[in-house]
Length: 404
Image (tube, rainbow, N blue to C red; front, side, top):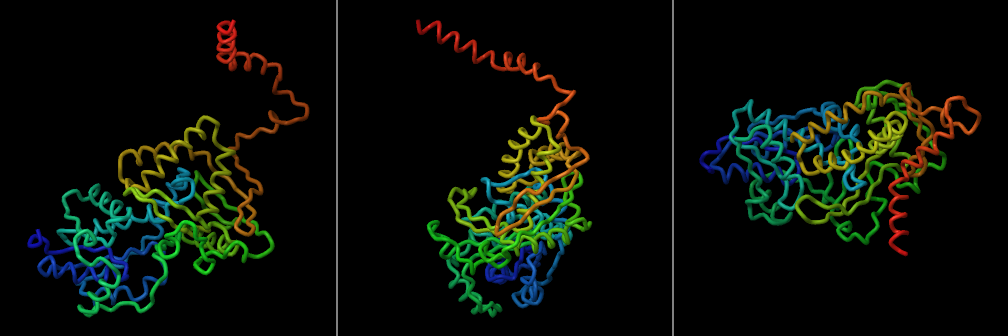
């Protein structure tokens, strides 16, 4: 197979792993050409100097692709509208970033006539699945290369030695945690977090203030939605990137969105992660508040089941599967009336409802009031209760009869 691989498109981050992968690919696949692709999904300063570093590591060409708006519109907003959360806590920040990155790899691989796509995900994690399932769904005949499942570099120190031997520029800082960052979240894994009994240190947080360090006065924020998608903050219309950036800043200074979870990885092991999701947490809370107003009981309850399955599909890397697409069609149908404004109070890590309104609200004060009304006959409840409770009554009569 090595002789057949002449050109490889690599998912490149500029970190140690992917920098080492470039010469390793050329060495193990008979001098193949390596094209580095760095997807900008909002990781910020990590993109500085990535282009030059990839070339110095041996890449023949480097693509830097700005995917932030597409990421939010086509992956984050659909997941938000579904209300999908993995295991009640994780807002899927890494999970839904992988399919858009892999899709771009496929696009460039096709344009470049590449034989293979490579990634730096380890054999222990979920990302290998997410990258490769997306490639299989969009380019079923292309070869996939996962160096971590092939090479004998079994530690960071081994990678550093390999990098020095091959003249690869490497960063001198020694990060305490394994982190993944994009415009939606920042994740922390490893080090002292590998013991679930350890409380996260406040010094770990790079986006959000620790709740106890947030200001002592509450801050109010309003979010406007149109058909389930956020469109404005505090009355100001914004594009998706600007909107989430603004909410990240608001949430972060109020200590909102810190999540600590020992989650079940797809590959079978449990993994402890701490996530910073200030803006995303505000959006999920606000969206749910608006659905309370705008969705009827049957639809909302069924949608809760859909949200769990949707979240599992996203986590498992099945973004491009038929079921996820079908569930999104259902979700979009439910969101036609999820339009309105939600007001929230943020205070030291807490998000508190402060009122919501919608032109499509199903709440009717006329029916629910404790005062006099002319629309509801309370006597109607007698027949309803008699029929609704009939199975209970019949069973009780049977039990009474057989107990004699």
